[in-house]
Image 1 (cartoon, rainbow, N blue to C red):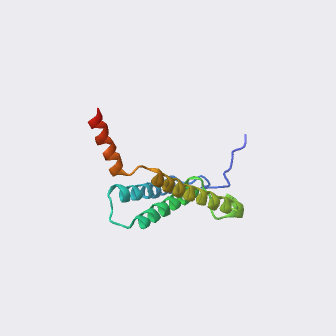
Image 2 (image 1 turned 120 degrees about the vertical axis):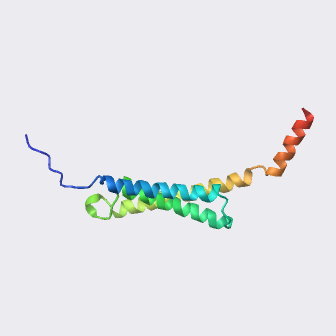
Image 3 (image 1 turned 90 degrees about the vertical axis):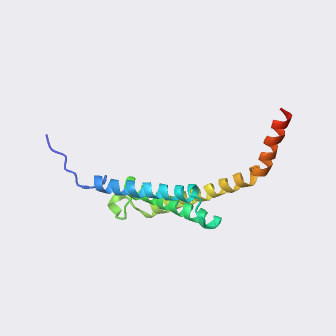
Length: 124
């Protein structure tokens, strides 16, 4: 029986590297949540840009730390993989903005909703 020799040492990442990725992903999740829930006094467009930027960074963190997409050719970081990752990133971010914009345009304004609730309670 011959022993299997691992020629790709660290190809699946070490525990420390995975914990760094986890910490970065957690921070990139908590910060946008804090921006929204803390009602930080920033212009709306800046808040959206910050949230989308942190979302893009989180996708990169997942690609590098968890999917092990690296910069050396042995790890498979080719031009095609880079282009594919950028295309997916653009689709996800643009799609998210599109959905949020359409939902904002098609939602009933809150004052009208309160008036409807008052009318329903008066009729009932």
